Image (cartoon, rainbow, N blue to C red):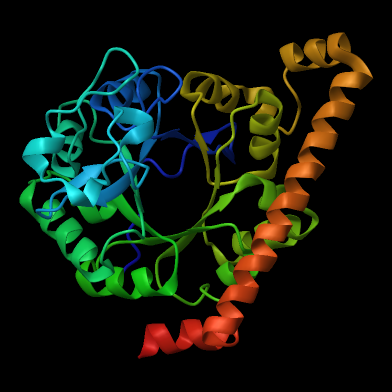
Length: 326
């Protein structure tokens, strides 16, 4: 089977690859996250792709919401899966302009509008719902919205673990799969899966082990996306390292950074250099200290994750092989 290529996933400037600008939950910095206003703002700001999160309502509708509960964004203490769509559709975001929660089909229909044919979509499939029902409903939603360009070239399901990857291969066999996570060792166990790509927490890619991971994935032709990058200096770092895409809340800033020819050649922008001189050593020290503090916390989380998987399933590679081949 030929490998699907996501529309627009080979942005080139100056002869070198430029990372895709991927709107995290739309343009989260400009509008309430995971709303149509946020998605419209992201495409208007020049996003190459959109990232969003999936949950199921009680009556099986795939909706776009990051959290398991509705409290943070909508002020309702209920869980998404405890309400029907007709109830959730009446809610509005706490943040102005008080937007409703969209369904996956609403976003797909939007992406079929003229001028948006090159925008592609990353679906972060949350693990709070029944895995098989979720994947079946996602497949039904994709099949229900006609597209001039096949959705399999514009959509990638993002799966946190082998269970969802196996179900994605079952229900969406023609779609490229993205593993979403923060463990490089877990990701390395998945490199033989056809049409795989990786969406990793950026701090893990910036770690000492991330350098070899990026090098190896580049040699294998496996795309690597990073999340969530909101600082200009780290966006420039991502450009220099030639990651495949930057998932960000700051879509307009990321688009600007990725479009700078100087960065494509591996140089920081003149504006960035001026800021560096102005802020001086103290700012660099604080940024470095924060990075290594975050790295320490992430390494603790990865260690706990690996230990939990070991206790629950045994060796990670054996468990993944068992799930995928079982």
